Length: 138
Image 1 (spheres, one colour):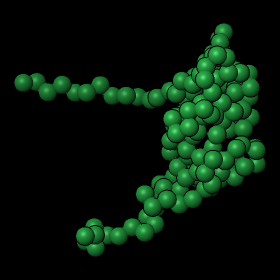
Image 2 (cartoon, one colour):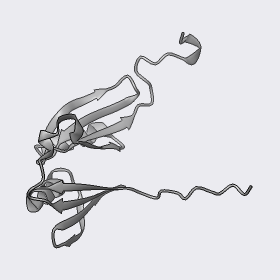
Image 3 (tube, helix red, strand yellow):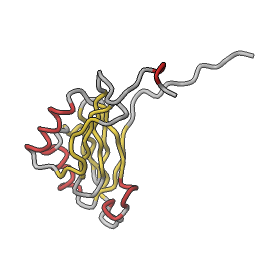
Image 4 (tube, helix red, strand yellow):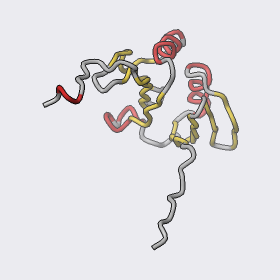
């Protein structure tokens, strides 16, 4: 049997339905520091670092703010979560969870977009909070 190599996933893009394309585009550009890569009728393509977004104009879509826990769409791994947190505060972004060190070894915070989508930004901690060496775990 010839083992086949699995094709690699190279990157990912999040596709989001938004009620007001111009307002959402402005939020990502001005508040979260994304850049516009392309704009076509009904769509805008944005990026910041390795994160890519496609915003689609869907004025009749249910707002994600009504989806409660299902409004999460991304956990973005970042460098300098503290600096990014300060940037989002300075830009007046709605914070859903304040910056905190979590017991799973991440420093993270979460924001809410104008359409109600929730994004979590996290940075791996070099020292794990409350971590016990494997030999001490029962």
